[in-house]
Image 1 (spheres, rainbow, N blue to C red):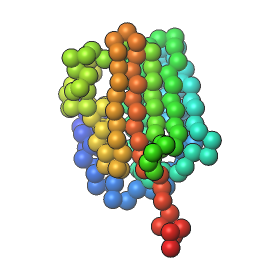
Image 2: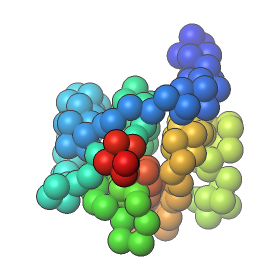
Image 3: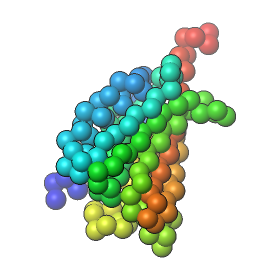
Image 4: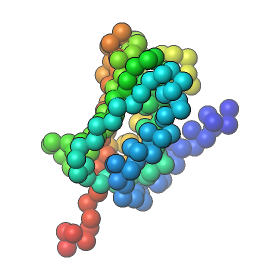
Length: 173
């Protein structure tokens, strides 16, 4: 119960913290997420394949919230695959000043009747709390990003989210 309360508080605090984002290295952030996810993935004999674009730009976000997002997405994927790989990619978006992150699995997928509702509080296809994706959405949007999900039952799920590239205000003066 304490964990659920903490997650709900994190949702509301994300908007407050978004006024003061910090500069985040995508490489460092993903390395931290990989370390956090390693024991979780090992439980299902899964591995995380990471592909980060060379010279991936810095982003502006809150490191704790971004770690929570990556952990939530990795944990979700892990619940639906065994003896498999989960892919995590990061690259500069082609059309906007954002970095795009992608988490992809080849698991069970999300039932079509809840796919368009998965970011709503309490909606879950696997009897979990239904807060993880809500937290992800609130956090990403609080920093000016966007999150989307694609899934096909029996084929897997892909979650994409974007975060703005850090723009040094001193560089433009």
